[in-house]
Amino acid sequence: MGRPTPDLSKPRTEQIYIVTGDEEGLRLDVFLRKRVRWRSREHLKERIRNGEVLLNDRRVKAAQTVRERDEVFVSLLRIGDPFDPADIPLPVIFEDEFLVALNKPAGFVVHPVGRHQMDTIINALHLKYRRPDDPGNDIVPKLAHRLDQYTSGVLLVAKRDDVRAELGRQFACREVSKRYLAIVAGIPAPPSGDIEAPIGIPLDGSRLPMVIRDDGEPSLTRYETVETFAKHAFLRLHPYSGRTHQIRVHLRYIGTPLVTDFMYGDDAPLVVDGKAVLERYPLHSSMLRFTHPVTKEEMRIEAPLPEDMETALAALRRGEPR
Image 1 (tube, helix red, strand yellow):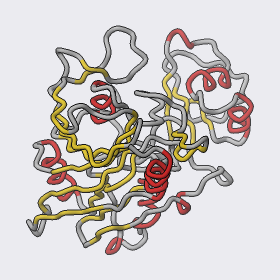
Image 2 (cartoon, one colour):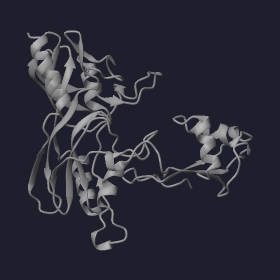
Image 3 (cartoon, rainbow, N blue to C red):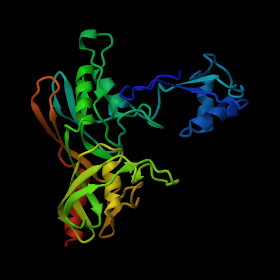
């Protein structure tokens, strides 16, 4: 039986790698460089010297060779790393004893993944709410859903397991109403409508993580044009299904991708009158409407447009009028 699936709502303090047959005989530092691509070999060798890497629970040298099924333990907690979860902003829009709604800033990942192991929203939440030495006040925050790294806006966090479970059920059953705002390249025609196109993982070697596929998962996004410029538009979007990258994939599909979208569009910054006014894709979760898991009240949580999107829209109004 394999290892249990990790809970991505919790900050990770360690990583364990299992050596495969084709990796047997590699030096430990070479093995780690193969697996930990976001760190240099010299950095990894330093960690081995400091005892932050263990081979089968033992300190060894970087030149030690690994064997199939060996366990390589890597500590992710390190004094002096160039980030501190306390520096991650957590703007609270709403909070009670059961849940928290944040206005997530763009640029932060919500849970540990890839090179982002400690610099995440969930790490900052644990730093703020965990009190292991005071059980009466110890809160284990749990993400109720996720937003991509460069997507800003409303993010729900549960303070109890039952609250998280009920919010998860509402998202899964499409009982949560969602509204996003976006700046796109091009002008949709017609100015409003439904994008109903199935989404799935590519099977043809595409570089994109998600694509439109006839046999993909049914996916529906409703869009409305709020404002148009000469070459761009400001849209309001309502995704009625929750597929990975759904809005980004659907906007690409109708020929109006998010500006600066390095994955589904053009990764160049948004330039107006020769000046770059935006360097991340402008997608903002502006509203969530759901039923409070405990009080059963209808909740409507809204997050104001972030400053960089406001600045970009102001520049478009000045420099690219219709």
